[in-house]
Image (cartoon, rainbow, N blue to C red):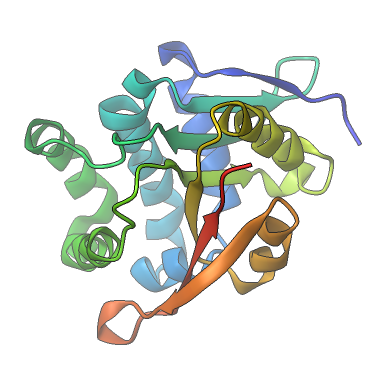
Length: 203
């Protein structure tokens, strides 16, 4: 275990955080399906995460990084507060050029996945954990746990529910340890891999 330092992400952190998340999700089944080419995925993932942070999550105060005491970024989590998970049309417009650069010819595939997630998103106000990941080099050292606990402590203080989608079956038991429960399995369009919708009841 390393001594995790969890703090809010600031604008100068976006590039390093996005690279760490890109490495974290390189072996994710959904990401591998959206970007079957390894080099395209390695280039596209950091651009995707940078766009999500810059144009949506950062302004909502729900982006945190976890790093070692020396300042190295090892992982991050992107949360949206209750009632703020959905992007405005304006932010979608601003994000579009970045998404085109991230997905290239796979933009329609990424858009279909996003639309499927939106249609199945719970309506009850909740904290939404959109993304959490740690660099494979530091996976298993407690950074993910520190990120989860940092925000869930606030969620519990507000007696609020929380929601996430797990795109990796191996992660379902991990989230269950934090009180999340699978509500349903969500098939992605055009033969994509399944995603598990998980809900955490208010404390």
